[in-house]
Length: 569
Image (tube, rainbow, N blue to C red; front, top):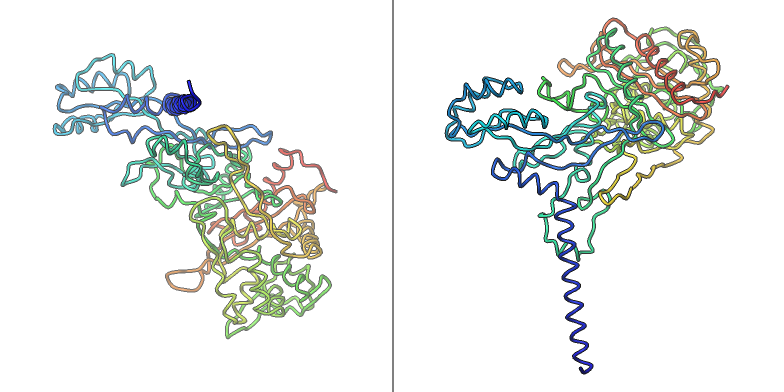
C-alpha cells in the first residue's frame, strides 16, 4: 500500500468518524435534550395542533438564605376532548364524565352539537388518576391528551412582577404577555430543534448573548418571597382603612438596585385571569404609570440647593406663607407664614414656599440639570416591560411658577420606580444604581450568568448627601408624630409627600383628592433598604403622614428583625 492510498484511507476514516459524531449529536439532541417535547407532540399529533403543549423556563424567587423558591413553572397533566361527529350520546357521556371530573354542562352540550368539528376540548388541567378514569370509560368519541400549562404556586404573590403568558394570536405560540414573562420571553422560551438545520446548528459559530434569542434558561429574581408577602399584607391592611383607588410599594437595596419586594393593588391571580374584570389591572403602575409625587421631591430639591452652593445648612429665608408667580398663587400646606426660617424646617414642616425659594434662587437651568441627573425625565432601565418616561417638560419652560411647583413635586410626573431610584441617590452617598428584578440566569447547559450591578456617579457630593440625610433623620426623630416613631437604636431617614391629583376632565387639580407618598431608608448612614409607599385618593385623610407613617414603620421594623440588621446608634 503506497503513501497516497494510506492518505485516502485516513481521509475516508476521518469522514466516517465525523459523520458518526454528527449523527450521534443529532440523536442526542433529539432523544435526550428535546425528547420530552417530541414525545408530547407525538401523543397529540392526531388530536389537535401542537401549540397547546409547550416548554418554558422557570422563574424563581430568592429567599434570604439564597434558596430558590419556585415562582413560575410548568405543570403537566391532561385535557379531555371530544369528536362530535363520533359522539353518539352526549347526555350519557356528560353524566358519566361529570362523576369523575367537574365539567361545564352547557359547554359540553354546545360542543357536542358542533357536528362539523372533529375536535372540541371540554376540560383541562386534569391529573393522571382522573384522566385514566375518564379514559377507562371507553366512550367512543371522547379522548384524553397530555398537556402542559404555566403555573404560579404563589398565586397573587408578585403577580405584576411575574406577569402572565398567552397564545400569540397569529402563530398560537405561547409567549409572555406582562411582567418578567414578557421582558425575558426570549430567555424563558425553549427554542425547538426544528427551528434550524441541525448541521447548521452544529457548525455555526454565531451565538447570541445571554440576553439574546439564541440562548434560553431559567431566571432567578431578587424578589424575597417573605418580604414580598409582608409588603402585600401591609398594603392590604392599609387599603382596608383608607380605601384608596390604588396602592403600592417598593423595597430596594439602594446600593445594588436589587428589588426585594414590589407590590401593586388591586392585583390578580396569574393562574386564572378570567376573573380580571378590567384588563388595566394586569399592567404594573409602579413602572408603567407616572404621577405627581408631591413633597418627597423636596429632599432632592434641597440636595440640589446644597450641592450647587445655592444654600448651605445654615441658610435662612423669609417665609411669607404664599408666593405670587406668573399671576398664580402657591402656598404652604396651611398658608401660614413662618418668617425667618432655616433649611431644616423646610423638610421638617414640608414647606412649599421654602422649596420654591431654593429652586428660584438656583434658577431653572440648575434645577433642570440636577433633576435630569436624578433621572426623573428618563426610564430607570428596570427589567420590566412598558416603563414610562417621566414628564418633566415644565422644567424647560423657564417660568417661575413651573420652577417653584416642580421644587415641591407638582407639575412634573414620574413613575414610582423612577422616584425610588432618584431618592436612593441620597441613601447611596451620591451614586445612582439601576433597579433590577433578575439577579441571574441559569442556562440550559447548567451554566449561570449573573446580572451585574450598574452604578453611576457620583451624582451628588458625599458631603451633600450626608447633610440631607442628617436633615431627614431629624425629620423622623422630631417631626413625625413628634418623634413617636423614632427608633432608639436605629437611625431612619424619611419624608412624606401629599400631592394634588390633576383633573384631566375639567383641568387644574381636584380640591379633595390627593396622592400620598412616603419614602425612607435605614440604617440612615449605611442603608440596607429604601422603602417607597404610595396610594391614590385615600378616603378620609388629607395628608400622607396620617395614612402611610404606620405602614412604613411596620415595614421598617419587619425588615430590621427579618434580616437581623445591627443597630447603628
